[in-house]
Length: 244
Length: 244
DNA sequence: CGCCCGTTTGATTTCATTCAACGCGTGTGG
DNA sequence: CCACACGCGTTGAATGAAATCAAACGGGCG
Image 1 (cartoon, rainbow over the protein chains, first blue to last red):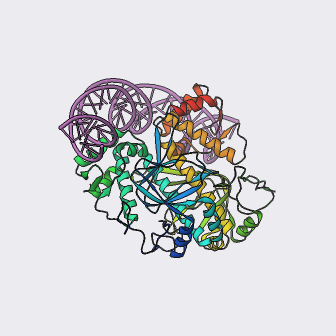
Image 2: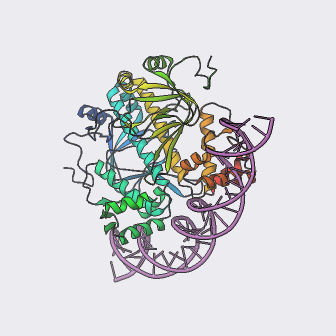
Image 3: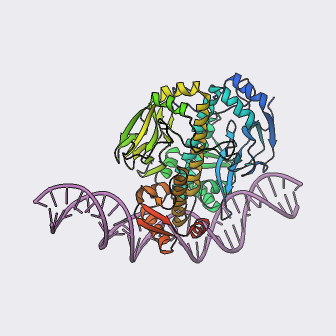
């Protein structure tokens, strides 16, 4: 089972699953914050949806009638700025929650970068559940804090002046996300295009390309192919990132 | 009463107060998310703390034993990067919640930009309250979503290439925050230094200074003094921001 | 096998950083 | 009461790095 494009579900159970880290508790907090019971509860009110590469999960401004909990695949969340260029706010991976809204409307557009499967959880049912189950709700708070920190890391990355440092930090970010999902860490999976990376780190796609090549030329990273990068010299990478 | 450096408390009641916006509900959602009852509950477990300009509320890495709910004054939340330069993650105003932690440790350092008064809410007591009161908890979720959107706006701002556009967006941001707090909107209060602004928008302090002066030269903004700016030409400002 | 999208590489231009000096206002001490 | 010093802000000139425009390349998919 689970032989499709997705990754295996969490240990045993089926149903929505959320990855986050402890807020105040001890360090040994598991990556998953929902109990089996809660996952089942959420499973009752949710459906599984599938999207092909390039398909939209929703559009900015749409009525926000559901949130999505990714099962497999990668999603980019973006908005288009006044000048027409897109700004990618976030890349989303399995066990992430997506569909943030403001006053009933989605604030970003979500597009599948790869084939995607996700639990679709209608917001009215979710809100009812949340108000009833304080523990579930607390876990959602943990997840939101987690995403808040991610957004702050993103902003932190964007203050780098040199494209080299931005790309380096981006790679470190991707790797840490991958590690956080419990996947192998010997190679970084880079599902998005150079253009997407540029729209995330705030540079032109050419600068992304040049930076990656420069890192490779210095022996800091190596390519298996366009979407699989290996970090060969961690200290060197850290140095590049640090010198801004 | 309330004649000190603080601003008046919310309508009538005393106790912690949180500003946020609706998630899924109707548009007519009030800026304040706590009921009188909840404010009183929180008041029981919290104390009022005061900090002078330049004083630290807490340091990055400290054991996170409390969160703060600002009553009056302005706080900057920052971390120092590898190269030694500070990055300001956030400016915090009255009714904001501050003291985000990861696994029991503060992730940023918080410093008072002006004289500050704040409710200090110990985390253990808060967690107990949250787990008991689902509505209170739901409101905290609203607040966190709000802050998440703010962080994404920050990242959005940081992708601007030209310092002029960054400063313009920063002014619009300050103004919208001010409006969200229900204060007058005819003049923007800019409590932070040029250096702080630079550390927030990712430019040198000189670029901030030059950009502000350029905006003034174009008649887009006007100065009453260093910390009070008036927007004279909104369309012009929007144009500057839009052309990246 | 050939097309097309994504990527790489190159030359020019532009803007922010950097280093440096000066101005301004405030608070302090003589 | 004045002088000075210090922090903060402004202004100027030179350097450097990325954006932009443009063209060639490669790999994957029909």
